[in-house]
Amino acid sequence: MLNLWLLLAVGLALLDWFAVWNEYEQINYFTKPGTLIAMLVWFWTVGAMQGILWWFGMALALSLVGDILLLLPEKYFIFGLAAFLLAHVFYIIGFNQPLPQPSLPMYVLFLLIGALGMVLFGIIRVGLMQKESRRKLVTPVLVYSFTIELMLFSALLTLFRADWQPTAAGLAASGGVLFFFSDSLLAYNRFVIVFPKARLWVRITYHLGQLALVAAALLNFAVM
Image (cartoon, rainbow, N blue to C red; front, top):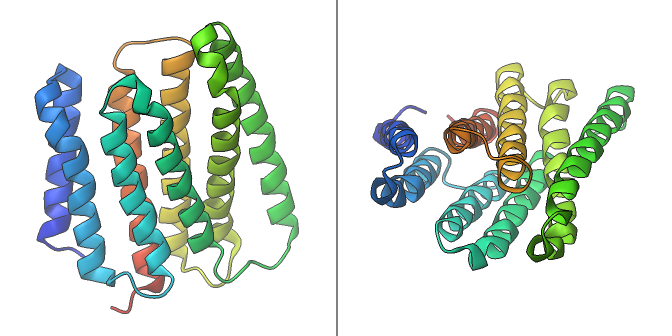
């Protein structure tokens, strides 16, 4: 799976982290979408986006759209949120083909993630309600929170599925956790409390999460 496009994606990600750390916004405008473009081309050259891989490729493409929209002024935030919501929907569909058989670990995992999601949303909702201009975001953020929880659930569930290779399942689980952490940190920093270098940690976990998710799909579904 290693080729020049993957190396370019990693290089652009590192440059992007450097730009975020030093607040070089002009570089960030190039490196943020550039990283996802290189990652998407890498995914295409290795897996050709055929069969189940199409869902993962589309999730990556929609994430690229979301990245671009979030670079724009505040009024475009809701559109960026919608793009990432759709990306998570595509990841969910990809992970659940075929549908897993019901099991005890599935139910326990669902309850644990649901409880975690409720706590996190409760905290973020308090932050949203403190400003009149943000109260209209409560419902969209709730829908988004539920969707990313399903994505995390689907990614972690691969650890208990016989149709997923252990290495691929480990990458999928790691990617789901990283992406979930990235989005949770972004929301907390944006709506609750601003803290130093939050953007950097959001970006690092986001890029590593995306890379792990699509690498897992390639390992499990691509014909090598």
